[in-house]
Image (cartoon, rainbow, N blue to C red):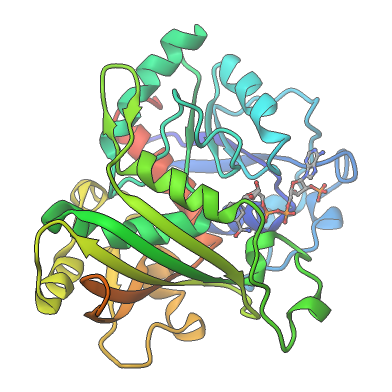
Length: 351
Ligand code: NAP
């Protein structure tokens, strides 16, 4: 690709925004040239207003960019949004109506019927909903594609190999989610040290509804929800990055533990076939040590783009159970949006 697509990052000073800037540095197809945040930051140099919390140094190319506010005009063709929920919907729709291709991390648009909620290894065909979206809204070039909640992404990436080979009737899921999942500074340290919080507002509902949409079927003009029932409990734990989930499944077709492990290990999908730049070689990594996956050891597997499963074994109530872990701001957020955008380049929606 000779020229790169110009990119704007919304919410550029936040946890996910910083990840976008880190991950997009040197990307072969996308180049960050506009950064957008709140009135607190607009008009100032990015280096002066961003409390950079990523281990790599802030890219030189970002340091001097003057941060824009939401009311400034955006020139870039591709927009990566990490705006807070509640604010995102109106801004993202306005930008898409101006012809921008918008990739959102916020929850506002995920369950909107004509917005595809995409994990490229799971439901790449759902991008066909963009044609319905454009028709409904009178857009010719603009579009909105959402990526799921950070826990949903890792859950569904792990479910997909089992879903396609054996079917899943019931799923019981308990999450142990990192503190960075609520942004920076997030949950106060005095609530997290020596503690666990057994409640994350709205999270259980998001995981359950988003999963049935992602595993659903694209009909002529909507997504028909998948026939899977989930029961979810979400907890916040004193881990910096990396969400862990305990999963028990009732399958539609019987499978041995070895067959389930083989389904995980051999799983490859469209992004791997297409060789998308951000596609992990192995979307689902299996750890066979009895005490894995662990956030500190496993969250960066495949550059943070994989879901790591372990402790795969029989369940005495359902059929099979396992643990899954993944990075919440890489594959769970910014990396997910970038992979969605790469898929849309290949599908011809960004040109
Ligand atoms: P965050 O660290 O709190 O960052 C929020 C960003 O939004 C900052 O850049 C902030 O700019 C900007 N912002 C806040 N109010 C604004 C306003 N009124 N106008 C314009 N910009 C405004 O949050 P985050 O964790 O990055 O999350 C961002 C989004 O991604 C949320 O929708 C979240 O649900 C979603 N998400 C987060 C994760 C995760 O693991 N953290 C994972 C998946 C999805 P200022 O610095 O100028 O205030």
